[in-house]
Length: 180
Image (cartoon, rainbow, N blue to C red; front, top):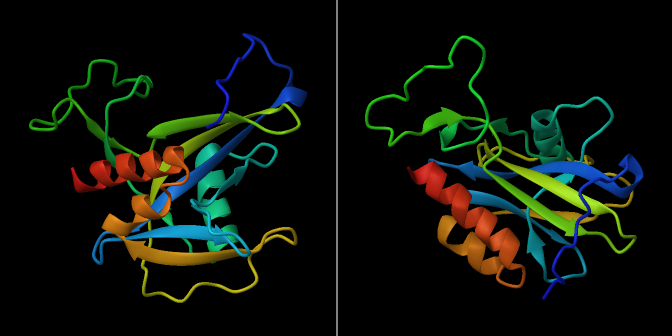
């Protein structure tokens, strides 16, 4: 198990980085896009660091494409969130029957861990959607990446990540939102 985080209330930019990733689904075929670093048995989700001046939503889609060759679109899902509504919608009511949730492409989860160098990694998770039958692009990974991408059934995705409970929980939460 990972050691508990002890995060100071203030970190300089040299001591943390922001990242984002997706749980990309094919709703029609009920599949989830996962990756495995070749030479390991550990499955995970596509994610990575944001580039300078890049929006975290764009990072999530870009990293998914780079690591898998699959282009995804962020999928609006029913979220309860602490984010504020856009200007002019301060008193907007959620749609009837929504249970108070609004369909958004905001992050649905945040994962954080300390890197071996001591830097704090903060990863925001989004739900993406793509066609699992479409051919993946070739040659999209960076020189230091060697991932195998797979589409797996909804029921199998979290089970394949049992060795990393955080990834498994991110998948379970995303699928609950997709199914809502």
